[in-house]
Amino acid sequence: MANIKSQKKRVITNEKRYRRNRAVKSSVKTAIKKVYAAIDANDAETARQAALAASKELDKAAAKGIIHKRQAANRKSGIMKAANKVG
Image (tube, rainbow, N blue to C red; front, side, top):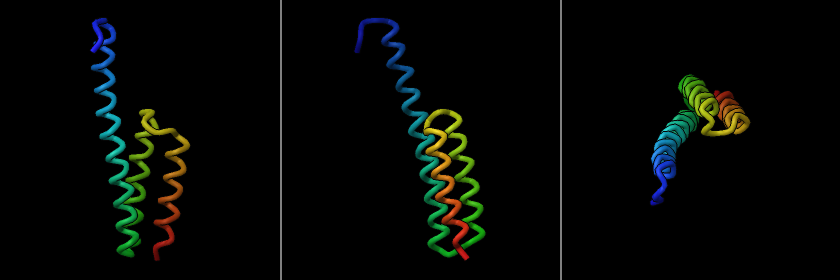
């Protein structure tokens, strides 16, 4: 670890950000998995609700700068297409 005070602070803030980012990414992945689980179960209504919830998680992650806004848009598009195909 560095001897410089500002660098010590930087290490601490980087660790906080890392932990927050990992938590948010994990929740996004879980939300997306729920969509695909509902699709595999052929449950249209649950898939749609899960897709909307996942979209919200993706929007939050993009707003915080954890994932890029276009990446969020692409993922939302993919899960909504998949959810809408379930009959």
